[in-house]
Amino acid sequence: MGWFSTTPFLNVPDSTQITYKKSSWWKLNQQKLTPWIFLFPGLLLFLVYVIWPIFNSLYISLLQWDGLSPAIYVGLSNYIELLDDEYFYISLMNNLKWLILFMLAVPIGLGLAIFLNQTIFGIRLIKSLFFFPFVISQVVIGIIFSWFYNPRGVIGPFLDKLGLSNYAILADENFATYGIIFAGIYPQIAYCMILYLTGLNNLNTDQIEAGRMDGAKGFSLFKNIILPQLKPATFLAIVVTVIGSLRSFDMVAIMTQGGPYGSTNVLAYYMFETALSEYGYRMGYGSAIAAVLFTIMMFYILFFIYRMYQSEKKGL
Amino acid sequence: MFPIPIQKRPLINRISYKILVPVSLFIWLIPLIGIMLTSIRGLGDITAGNYWGIPSEFLLFSNIKDVFQNTPMLSYIINSFKITIPTVIGAVAISCMTGFALASYKFKANLFIFFTFIAGNFVPFQILMIPVRDLTYQMGLYDTVTGLVLFHVAFQTGFCTLFMRNFIKALPNELFEAARIDGTSEFNIFLKIVVPLTRPAIAALSVLIFTFIWNDFFWATVLIQGQHAMPITAGLKSLNGQWVTVYHLLSAGSIIAAVPPVIMFFLMQKHFIAGLTLGASKG
Image (cartoon, rainbow over all chains, first blue to last red; front, side, top):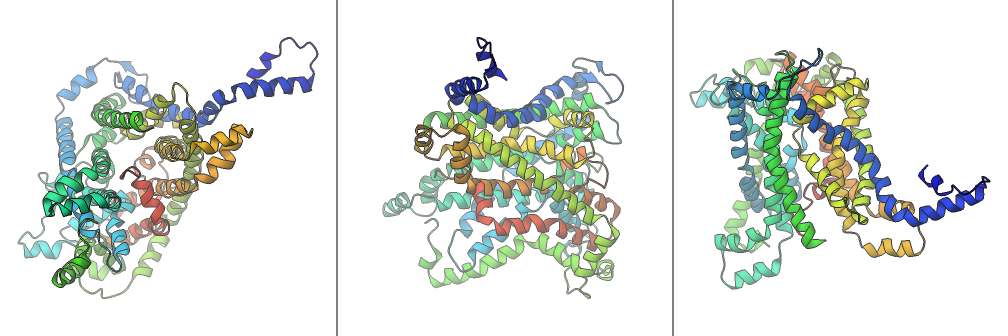
């Protein structure tokens, strides 16, 4: 309706003139307004469903609230309670284990990519099959590995041979987390592999040939010439692996639900459990856990944005 | 080429490579092969502990039939489609617009908005969970497909905008300028020039988002409660609780759940990988 205000001097509502005025105003401002019109639906949805909830959650973390009865403002007491919460520390430690072990997906993916970067008959199909685990839902991967680890399941016969009959890794509080991480890393390796395969595909052949002329071979060729060229792939692989490791919810929910005795909890699952499960509806406390997770993630986000900002300034 | 093409290596290397590749593929896929073998077995094999041997009966189809008959699997699958397809259409359409706006117009807030979209896309779901659930509840959309789709579209807009913006940015700007000089309106530039040229990006995004949303479990758990709207991931999880010992049926169910994204991947492989590896090489 804004543009009608540009016609206050017209006493007679002359429709043709109004349209003319409207279009000329529009013509003048079209360049300025169009991006905002195009941005509007996306920006609105994003603000309502992503940006506002972040701040709202941070606020809820200062409340004591079960989601139904009136909330009580309690300041930082949820965070203070976290400091004394054994399960919070277990979850945090497990997140750290996830993060560190998940990083293995990057070199393993690179190794696989180098191994498969050949042109033999059927290699395209083979690469796709290696990539397969990434396409499948984590829920399915979780179910597959639960079945796989079940001592009376697929792995049973091998355990018998190793003298570990009836050993259930997911029921062992010392090792269950590693069992889940192993399952979680499986599709992540596939993702890293595909990133590196793309990177290897786009290597600068001249540089490699020049390096070979100079007598660079094997590892020194790899380290001095190949690896620097794979930098964009490595960067992306690290970014997606860090994020993947912090989004461990699905696997934990399917495989152990945090058990045995809370030993496989991670922040993502512990938050859900506190806020939305039979253990009680502690929205404020759950939000405080989410805020901790968010803060950790924010470091990576800012690092990523900083990198993008640098390349924007340079490139475009 | 790196590494050196195997064809230039001695015969012995070539032969061992050709043996090593299928062997490693087999090892890599053992978990998947395990579940496939399980899905064709009968209860007899499972209780007898015959997991790796030759199945005594071939029951894949009867297991699949069992799953469909005795569980709401069919309705889970239909729900998954009802959630996934509108999300793909919504997120891709919206991000074509936001991507275009951020790629081809200069204005002060441009980079800030762009980075906001990227940052939001990496945020852990848990920080959104309680407010989004409340909001959905208040709109009367809790436990409905619509409520879940709305959130998915909003969240995916972050990633899709990043993707589309970079793609459109790489298009030659002269095209737009020439059209502007010819007097083409900005909307027609979008409809007649940008949309047709971004078709490969639209295809890549569509397969990616299809897979992401089909495989979503967290939001289906948070925003859906009843069977009537539950997608297959959450459905499988509830079956997982019920069927601790009936692994052959659970395996069959898992395979059914994996089929649509797998088909999508094989049909659109090039686009899928192009989408996932965006930025992995300096083009």
